[in-house]
Image (cartoon, rainbow, N blue to C red; front, top):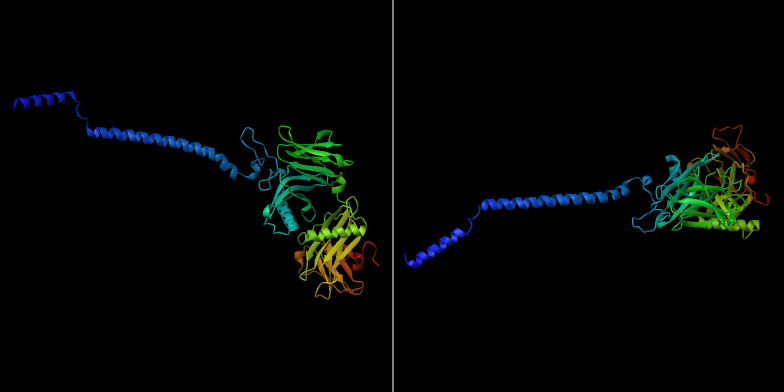
Length: 446
């Protein structure tokens, strides 16, 4: 070996003594694996914490969406510090129900009555009660409701229990942004104001142009009442939010313009087909003309309405000038002799039957006598002339809810009606008299 080789070997050995020995490769791999595992566990724990936090944040929203609407306030509120609070009634998410527990039978019957007024199936639209009470001393159930129909249409109204079931005593279009539902209702102790607003609000009433306001009698949170005494034409209602800020101010309804006359047959339901607004507007016009009061404000309550296969439209009921007594009226359109209007006398408040004649129907040799009996009537009997015993009529007409349609000879003379009570008591009929007398106009039967 040359001297150069010895020097090179010595240098290499010296360098080898300076370098640390190589670690076990398996031990390094194990340490790296443990470090990766620790990182993964930490990431998993952190992810779990984030997931729990996310679930905790989402759960209130899920609970709000799935909890019964009775338990979720429907007054829209924002968590933003300066965000406004909306107290308007949203028909899609109405205010919470307040008041007595309305029986399901009452709610279902009320929904059917509202649906009938709109000419729609009972289950086609939503009818939601907002407030219910038992009005003393009459003991009647009253409910304020909101109805939502197709194309975003909505109304609100008041239904009241009657012998034949709930009847709608008032109904009004629901304007967007409405913050107070205000109705003047007749009662045993005079006319009263009923107002429904969002939960948490306070309602006050001011007399004489509202120089001062007094709290109304609270019935439930956001629901209150007050008597309507004297002339409330200059009186004002207002609604305050939780902070005492005024969110609504408007004139009080005039008691004389909303209370029904004493001879309105309020216990009688409206039967038959849907509302025919055009026909009823024409009836009101003819009623004004008949009384010689062309500018009078007229109210109308239908007892029976419908149409025939021959295209005849009709409505029969009671009309009155606001502040006056009600008259029995009827209007028929589409017959061969044109428009037929009956302006009858003031309705007997103890009437047992109301009748009207649909004459001159295209293709028919007979007229149709429409017999509208008092609710609870049993059998209806008819005699086509003075001689002979009245015979039962109305077989197969159960769909008319007690109303009976009778084929009547246009030349009938002396035909008679007899109504029996639900027990069929022949000795004490509810009504037994001439048809002619029931068809008399205001000016007499001549």
